[in-house]
Structure formats: C-alpha cells, structure tokens
Image (cartoon, rainbow, N blue to C red; front, side):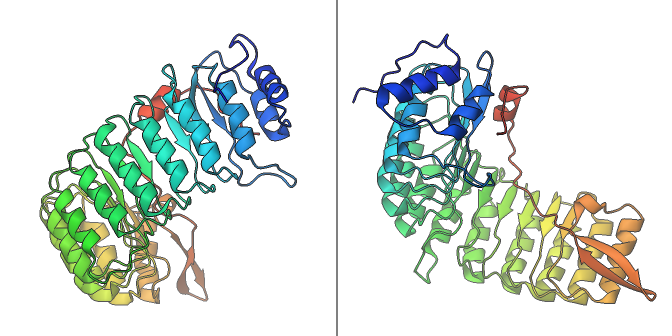
Length: 409
C-alpha cells in the first residue's frame, strides 16, 4: 500500500485524522482524536500519546492506529516530538514510523517508543530510516525486545547517522555481540551525547563488554551520559572500565546502579575521580560498596581535582563509619551538592550528622532523600522520594520546542 497522505495540511489535524481513518476503514481511536482536537499545528508541537497512567477504559494504540497517525502527520511539518510509549505497537507499527522518519521534510526531533512490542524487524526498519534522517535527536526504545539483531542494526546506524544525540536501549535484551557492536560504533560517532544500554543479557563471566567500553571511552569525543545499570558489573569489570574512564575527558554522568560493585570497585572509581575526571554525577545505588567503599569515595570527593556534584549510594550496606565519612566529604567538598543514602544503616550518629547538614543549609530537602525527625530526644531519618534524575547535558530539543503545544489528555 502506498504510504501517501490523502488530506491537505490546511485542514485541522483532527479532521485529517478522521478522514484517513474513513479512507483506510480503520476505527477512530477516541484517545487519539481527543488529543488531536487539542493540538494546534500552526507552530512547533509535541504530540503525547503515551499509554501509561491513563484512565480506565483507555484504548492503547495499535499498529493500525500508527498507520493512520503516520499518514496524518506527514501533512504537518511542525511536528517536533512524538511520544508513543507504553502502547501496543509492534514491528509493523515501527515500519510505519520509519516511513515517517524517511520523509524529506520531516522536522521530528524526538521519538519515544518506550515499552511497546517492537522486536528485531522493527528496530531494523527504524535503523534503516535513520541512516538518511537528519532531524531526529532523540530515540527511546527501552523496554522493547529488539535483541541481538536489533542492537546490531542500531550499531550500524550509529556508524552513518551523525545527528542523533540520545539513544535509549535499556531492557532491550541486547546480547554481548550487540554491546560490542555498539561500543565499536561509538568509537567513531561524534554526535551521540547520551546512551542507555542497561540490563543487557550477558551470560559471560569474563565481562568482555567492559573491556570494549574501556577501549571506546578514550577515543569517543561526544558522550556525556552513559547508563550501564543492571549489567552484572563486578569489581574486575569496574577495574577494566576505570582504565578507559581515566583517559576520558568528556563523560559527566555515569550510571552503574544495580550491579555487583563492592569496595574494590569503589576504590578503582575513586582513583578515576582523583585524576581530574570530568564526572559530575555517579549513580552507585543498589551495589555493595559498604564502609570501605564509601570511605574511598569520600576521600576522592575531597580531592582538588574532583568536580563531582551528585552521588547516589542508596542500598549499599553502608553503616555509620562510611556514612559519616560521606557527610564529612559533603562538608569539605566545594562541588558536591546532592547525596542519596536511603537503604543503608542509618544509626543515630548518621541521623544527627545529616540533620546538621540540613539545618545549616549545606543540604536542602531537594538535594537528598532523607528527612530528620525527633522522637523522645532521638533523631531519626525518614525517606524522601527524591533520587537522581536523568540529567541530559544537552537542551536542543527543549530549546527548539520551548513554548510549543504539548496537550495532556
């Protein structure tokens, strides 16, 4: 079937959508129609059709919905953002979106397909379209089971595409070959700023992927944000990764949450921080660095060369000695402003130390995940649901879309 729009762009987008539904004999999705009725297309706009958190009876988008929507959106060059996360889109729907990306006049800068049903063929279609696309800055595919072949197709795309700045592939069932292919592609890619490859399916105890990433880090000239959570990373892998981090002068956010890093791994990371590393944010939550690891990091944080601003060590089996060393580092560090410690052993000396940090203003409630309270003269800490947010160190998408329409159905 030819992928051609049938309605002129001068027509309101909701009317265009209804006309194409009628032409394709596809039922109108009430949620899509309602969203389009709220959308103004006279200036840049982002269309939010994400399927999470919607009201009871909400009809998630299927491939047929994406077919109609893609044909409709071909008529509106002011579309800059499309959020289709948490729907029921499969490889067929991904192929329709690939056609949208291949349109010569597309201005789409961000595409979110998080947690759909896209597999390797859909990833291949998207990767192929991005080889010639020069507008898309952000592609989010986390939660789609694209597997080894999908990962390799996207790695091949990164060798050609020099526009994409953000790529999310967390929980995509990437395998060792995918990881090696992606790390190899990143040696020559000079535009990607943020990549998430968390929770790859790695069954080797040799951690070859860490060796390849270590070799990539010294030569990559663009990455500022790297997410490697849930990778089974051990101290040995941390040692290999640190070798590359010591020679990297660009990376600012390192996410190592939910790994197997212990005190020795924290020691390797502390040596990176002592070497004038550009790292500003480190997520070590849900590891097992314990008191010695916390002390290694505290010492490094206070070194003149460290520029670390935010640190999460939640759920690391750290007790009083380690947490007090971190509170002391916070006091003495000229750069550290955010620290997250919940899930460790918060005994009263620790509670008192963090109460003083908050009372004096060295910490604010927004910069930590604990809040002090007193009972019968004793200080305790309660949990605040604050945590490291994804810090994307680029603002092109936001600046371009500032003031654009983002209807929230």
